[in-house]
Amino acid sequence: MSDISKNNTAFSKAFKCPISDGVLSWWRDHCLWKGTLPSMLDLDVFKFPKSLPYLAVFSYDFQKNDYVCRLAGEMVNVSHPTVLKNAMLSEVYEKELAHKIRTDWDLTFKAQSALCVTAYLDHPIEELYSWRFILPLYDEAKNGKVILSLSVYDYDAAYYHDKYLKKKYHVYELSADDLEKKNNIN
Image (cartoon, rainbow, N blue to C red; front, side):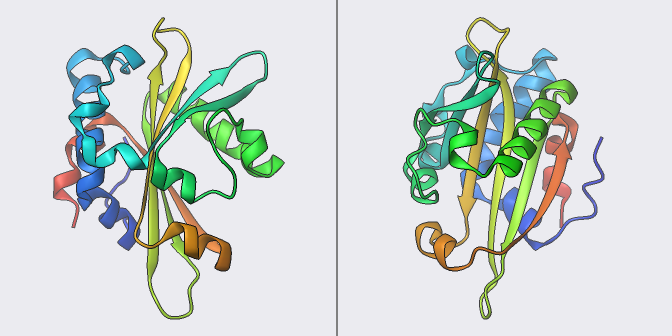
C-alpha cells in the first residue's frame, strides 16, 4: 500500500475533483469486489459522463512493443500538440519519456494498482496544477493490457502547455485500498 499521507496540493485537488470521482470509484469498486482488474467489457463510460472529455484509452500492441491510443476525449486531445487517436506513445512523446511512461504503465499491471501523476506548471504568477490517473484494465479477451487515462487540468491546457514547458511531476502508486481511503485525505 502507498503512503498517501505525504500529499501535495495537486494530489489533494486530484482526489477532490468531481471529474475524477466516478471513474476512480468504478475502478476501485471493481478491484475490491471482484479481486481483479476490470476489463474493457466492464467499462461503461456513460456512468461518468462528466469525465468523457478527459478520458483516453491506450491498448498495448505486442508487435510494436508500444501503447496505441484508441480513444481520446476532447480535453486530452487539446493538451497535446498532435492528435492522439491511433498514435503510439513513441510518436507522441520523446523517446526517453515514452519509455518511462511505458515502464510505469507496465508496472501498474504487475502491481495491479493505479497511478496518480500530478504536475505543477512552472508559471511565474499562478499556481497551475494537473493530474492524471492511470488505471490498468484488461482488453475484451482479458489477456491484453489497456490503460484508461483520466487527465484533468486546473488550467487551459491548450494555452499553457505550449508557453510553460517546465513542470514538476510527482508519481503516486495507489492500491484499490488507497482509493477507498481517499476521503480521509486533507
